[in-house]
Length: 72
Image (tube, rainbow, N blue to C red; front, side, top):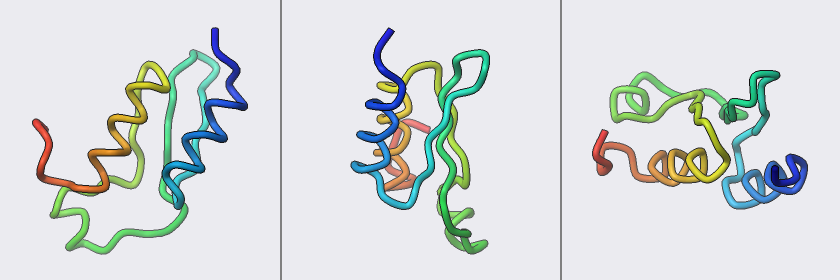
């Protein structure tokens, strides 16, 4: 298994404004450090995203940079 601290640091560096953590069950999460407006939420932005692996979390965070453009 890859090093959690390194993966976390890389994700948080690549996606500023997000806080990354991993649950006891091994799932990866990222939550925005700030709040979203109703307009941003309606546009497809999320406060928190979840994934099974850091690579998948990276894809979800990249999609959050351009909400509404992904396969959704």
